[in-house]
Length: 507
Image (cartoon, rainbow, N blue to C red; front, side, top):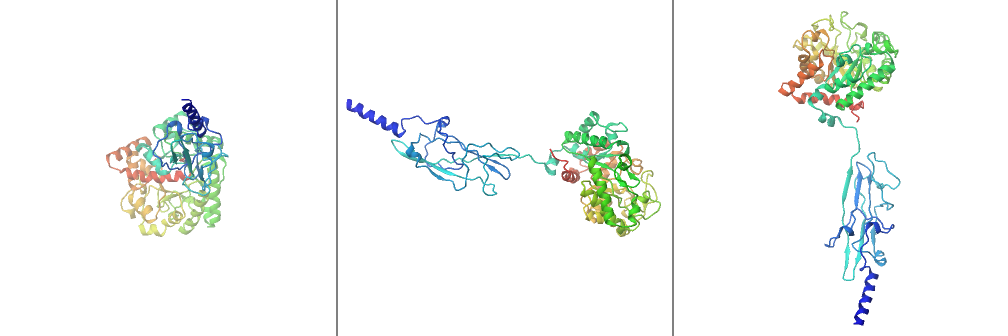
């Protein structure tokens, strides 16, 4: 009996020395020098480890470029003796840094001193395989565990135009196709500052843009604040910023120069006499710098009409009676504006230079020109500036006999889709002239004119008499099938693409 007790005692001491008589360490008991387990292992033994005996290894990456490993010390299924630890085999050829545990990368992708950086630009996580020898009195088991847990964090980014389009309701999409005055939004005139009235109105009918006139301007700081606050209200309403426009041609049509003392110029006919592209570019650059500094991102300039008839409503606002001179000067001003962050607008397609009337005051203005005559003269400046990247084209209310439909051009499919889009290849934003002008408002209701303009291929309806009625009627036309929603999406995609380039989709 004593012999048996001695044998049991010896066996107990032996078991303690080999580690079989101890409870496994918990992760809190692990030595501080325990190296983190690798991301990828293989487990050949079918015997499962208990929750106390294992710790899961996670691999966390930040999309799309930087990868960052968060490693956790893993305890073997039983305590490993000093001799067994010496048998540990590592394959660390991928160069994982085994410093103290790391924090996952934040959304901005910033890394701390312990962060893991891959040796090569790669989307694949680095892999380290470790083998642990588990020794017991009864048998020897070689275990290698595989853990491939990948967590991807999302980095904040500016949404694409397509993402924004998919987020907008029908009413919000249609609203993007309207540009109105501050007074139309609130019913207060003149508007020189904005508050809850503007905020609530934009929440109910979020439009795509606002045009400002001289009556809205009192000082540079005033208009900066007005535009900034209105932009904030628009973003709150639909997540999209506004086109903020003004007529700043230079000469007699120059709201900011006249009210705020920004760069001023003579009428464009004065500069057209010299036909100097550099001068035209400098004019556009000066206008662009001033407008951009005030918060404007669209200028309804330059005038691309050719001076054909002395009775037209534009006069010296036109560069020249020579279409090539107009083309040269218009391209210069357009480039100067757009190089300074302001969208240029060619106007008034297909040209008002041959009119003998006034679209502001007359119910109908008819221009008797064939398509061939337009190609030889009026189309020349528009085509040149379109090929040089003009962002906007304004389509006028004149009726051109050569199109054969007896419609104002901004309501004419022939003028907009077949000529401007098709023949001249314009895929930018087509905006109507103001629908408050008599050639539209004396003949059509706001809703009817808006629907005709959209069917013709227009992207933005400028200043309807009643923009709420117009938006409602367009939405009803879409729901009834009169206007395909794809026609709306086509225009809104153009609008959002331009706004993306201007930084108006940032969240």
